[in-house]
Amino acid sequence: MRKLKNILITGGAGFIGCNFIHYLFGLSNSGTDLFGDANFTGNVVNADCLTYAGNLESLKDVEEKFGGKRYFFEKVDICDRAEIERIFKQYDIDTVIHFAAESHVDRSILGPEAFMKTNVMGTYTLLDVARNYWKCSLDNIRDDVLFHHISTDEVYGSLGETGYFLETTPYDPRSPYSSSKASSDHIVMAYYHTYGLPITLSNCTNNYGPFQFPEKLLPLMISNIKNGKNLPVYGKGDNIRDWIYVEDHNRGVWEIVNKSPAGEKWNLGGENEWQNIKLLNEVIDLTSKEIGKSAEEVRATITYVKDRPGHDKRYAIDCTKAKTQLGWERKMTFKQGLLATIKWYLNHEEWMNHILSGDYKNWVAKNYTEQGR
Ligand code: NAD
Ligand code: TYD
Image 1 (cartoon, rainbow, N blue to C red):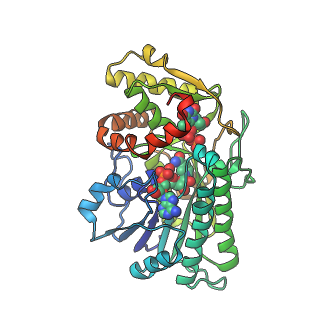
Image 2: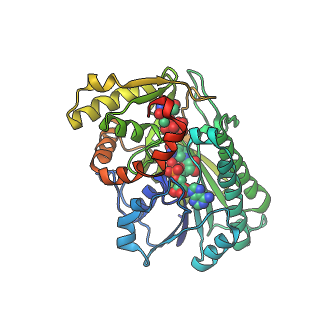
Image 3: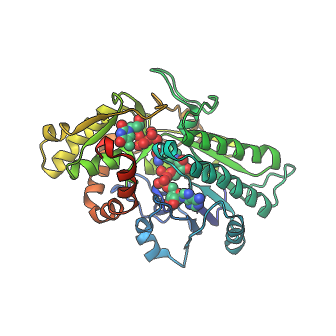
């Protein structure tokens, strides 16, 4: 087990990062005790520049309980080398868990530049600062510091009807988003092989759970059902994604950070494949019941829209390595997790309304009016 003291979380105001910070401080949002305790007693520095996807409202409870004691927020762009250097020095960072990214495929198609800047150059900047601050060398790979990079299964490309992505599957990214993440993965590995920076890397499937920005499939559909809006399905709705509850992903990351040897790459996934249209029908049934609407009336608002260009057909991950070597496995069943997630969004109206009245509304109005969002 590594001894982690001062963790720099990048992108901690986003969906997965804020759930991770909650998990570290024992403030699970799952409504269950499935995820146990992270047993972390050190400090957390959250560096996030608060793009449209960063929301400090998601961390209100953490700030109230731990702010200025064990939790410190820094509004910083990860591309800003001087500021990242200051943070390493000021907090004596020994661990980086790097979540910050531009993360939405549709936005990457409309404007790839921010993806290249943050995902490629931002990751490079963090790696280079860490290497210098930790004085890394190939002759002596340190075991008291670690850089963990969070990545996606989308780097592997698209699967047909059969097969799974393994850690050894060659990269074949198709979208500006996945290609920028693939680039960052390669740079992370290069820093291990070239400079002896102790790194680990994880590639995970689609996450779901609380605090996800409502441009992604599940919160978008739950919000649209509630507000009586159309439900835009890309193409025929037959693309397949593998869904994992966000705290299962984060627990996997925590296992890796604590136990994995440096230089290792890990696949994490839900072993839970759903065709988009089947998943949407499930969401319609559960959400309609919760809000007392007729599922048939809601189903009539499904709107098939123009497909996403280069839309990957199927993602599915083989996570045997994490299961056998780390003893990690998914704990939340999809049935339980989906209902808990739907209830969470319905019960957090204020959180959702603040987002829907801000940048998201303007962005959709500019880019998606023809899709009836
Ligand atoms: P998100 O878009 O919800 O959050 C990203 C966060 O990063 C935001 O808080 C944003 O303000 C911050 N950020 C963006 N650019 C920044 C910059 N230049 N400097 C500092 N902060 C910046 O994303 P998410 O869904 O939480 O994803 C987190 C990570 O997990 C990403 O690396 C993503 O590629 C990866 N991932 C996501 C999924 C998923 O299903 N969401 C699946 C696998 C992997
Ligand atoms: P998304 O949540 O954007 O995640 P990703 O593209 O990273 O997998 O989309 C999940 C799936 O849902 C993907 O196949 C695209 C599809 N989709 C729709 O059909 N309609 C929508 O409005 C959105 C946002 C996604």
